[in-house]
Each structure stands twice: as structure tokens, then as C-alpha cells.
Amino acid sequence: MSRINIPRQLAREVLLEAGHRCAIPTCRSTPVEIAHIKPYAEVKEHKFDNLIALCPNCHSRHHKGEIDRKSLRQYKANLSVLNSRYGDFERRILLQFATQPGTNVIKLPGGNLIFLLYLIEDGYLEHIGHSEGHNDDEFPNFDLYYLTENGQEFITKWLNAEQLQ
Ligand SMILES: [Zn+2]
Image (tube, rainbow, N blue to C red; front, side, top):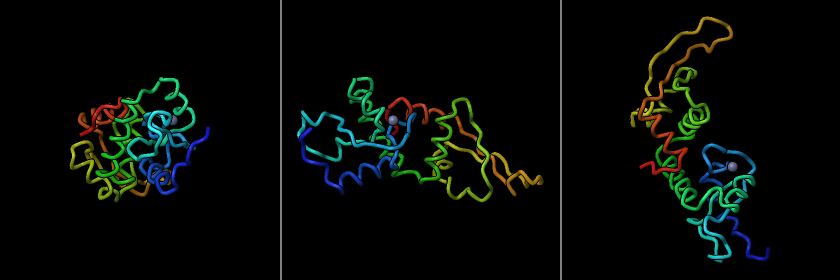
């Protein structure tokens, strides 16, 4: 393939946007490649809005048409919503729920409430309990958080490449 390489700074921005993981929320694999949403052969340029980080498997599924452009565009838009609204810790919590369907409670070491404030403010997560652990194999103390119905809906939309906001 003879084409001009993607400028390093632009590549870095695309990788950062996806947290250096595949942008497909059900995948999130590494390593990643930079994919053109609309094929390079058509656009003949590298623009941030048309670039997305994908693992080699999802990249080839995109080329085979198994993951369409519209979904990729929405996944990219959703990454931007997630990145601008939530911190890394919150995104990990969302991912944790996303990869474990049917689970709606998570147990975390105590003292992390501040890192989850936006998810709580948005009504996606609820602090439902606190406990002092007394077993050696238990966290010293821990909090329980519940994924609300709105939270479940948010994750479902994210996984289905629907608009988040
Ligand atoms: Zn992937």
C-alpha cells in the first residue's frame, strides 16, 4: 500500500481518544491499529474525524463490512462523550459492567466515592453500602455500588453504538 503515513501527532490523538485500546466497547483489545472509517482510497487524506483505533481483528471485520461505518462513527462519538464527561476510573467501571452482562453491583475498596461522582450525579451509579471488612482476605473496608436502570440503559446504548447524549 503506497500512501502517506499518518502523521505521528494525529496518530497519537486517535490512540489517546480510545485509551490505546480497540474502540469497539465489547472488544477493547490491544494492540491497536489506526483505521479509516471511510476508506483511505475514497478520502485520500488522514483527518481525525475519520480515524479510529481498532484491533487487527475489528479492523479486518470493518473491511469485510461486518462493522459498518455508521457504527464506527457512533462508537467514535461515544468515546468523545465518555472522555469528556468521565474519568478513567469511571470508564473502567462502565467497562466492567459492559463486559459482565447481568451484573449490576460492584464492590470497590472504600474511599473511592470522589472518583465516581459524575456517574453518581448522572444517576447511573448508586452508592448502596459500606462495610468494615474483618477477614484478612477482605478489603480493609469497601463500598458497594449499584448500576441503576438508567446506567444499564446507558451501557446498552454504548454497546449497541447508539447515541449517548
Ligand atoms: Zn477490536
